[in-house]
Length: 182
Image (cartoon, rainbow, N blue to C red):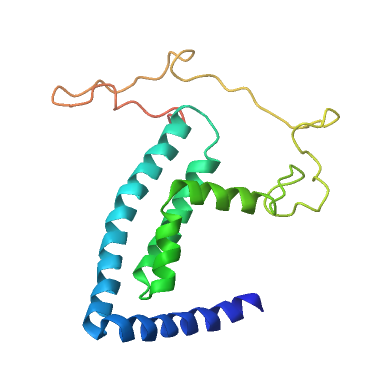
C-alpha cells in the first residue's frame, strides 16, 4: 500500500513544483531547467557509474567485500532513473543520491533492516538446512567410482595422429581427456 501512495504522491508533488517554478520563471526556462538537469545528471552518472564499476572490479581482484561498491552502483543506477524522470523533486532526489556521503547514509539506514544468515541456499532463511549442508561434521557422502586408465600415459596400443605441418596449433589433433579413443 505505501508503494501505491508513492505512485500517487510523487506525480502530485512534481505537478505542484512545475506550477510553482513555471509561475516564477516562466514556461521555457522551466523546461530548460528540467532538460539541463537531465543532461548534467547523465554526465555525472556516467562518471560515477564507471568509478563504481572500477571499485567492484577492484574488490573482486583483492578478494574484499564487494557489498559497498555494489550497493553504490545500484544507488547510482537508481539516481540515473530519477534524473531522467522529468521533474524537480525526482531530480533533487537523484542528485542527492549521487553524493557518496548520502549513499553511505542510505546504506547504513537500509542495513538496519537487512538480516543475513547462513541457514540455507537462496532466500529460504527460515528453513533448516537440508541434509548434506557443508559444514556439518556428521555428513557422509556415499558413492561408487571406477578407476580408468589414462589413455595417454598407460596404453601403448593407441596411435595418436601426428600433427599436420600447416596446423597453427600443434598438439590440438589429440582427442580430449573427456573422450575415449576407439
